[in-house]
Image (tube, rainbow, N blue to C red):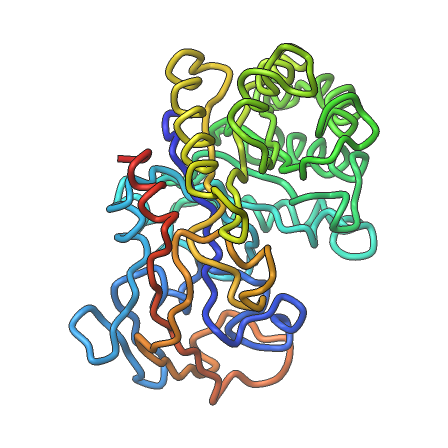
Length: 369
């Protein structure tokens, strides 16, 4: 991957909560990258009801993609993606700002009690939704595919990932043979899963199986996707008293490139600015010396999780916080959506809030620019 400096992007406004998102029209699927979310990531949107926002106000689009470009971000990591939604405008807008995208396969598709049994049909839908307008290849803004997020915490396991990813490659080979061979990763939280080092116990069975899958060269396209909140010394110098950094240990064990799909440290911790600066500067220095081993990092994250209270440590990782003001309010109708699973969308709305820089903004920008 040529686009090394990434960021995790899920900056939903007030009113969003993952536990209730699917009961709404606008937040259904927790998909930040589809057309009706354009007031957040883009520069203008007019709904089917005539409600609009743009860059001239008084209803202002927030235009996060431009902000990310100005921060030096080269790569966006997403979390959820509803394939029935339209995403071409988002992908085109990222292209226009020279930002690439890690497109996600949501946890829903990996869970045995949800999408996994119907995966062969759903994989076709996902690949089609990742495609360009002509359905001739993956969209040119897409840099890679990430499948699932933190299996230990979200109700699926390595075998579920093996089954899904194997079928993905088989379907690519049979139906999408002309498509690019994008790199594929499986984001894993930094627990040991019973292995010697964090993530190893998950990776051992995953790669024992997927390294044998040659359909569409899958075995040559896999990357390690750990999510870490450890410091620079642990990552690059001495993990667990081994005398080696974690990145070297992981690369030596699996001979696969590494992309941190989350890396950061919460503002609730003392010394957090220096800690994050070490993580980012250490990663960039290591990448400069070992570009084939560490191929990217995604800082966690662009904006705090709005659905958590400010006292929650998980709410304190953002380069931006939610400032409480209003940029614009959009009123939607049924015609804004490709589907609705909970009745009519007429009368639904979204208020786009203002963001405020946290001290971590300067840390990210210093390293990324």
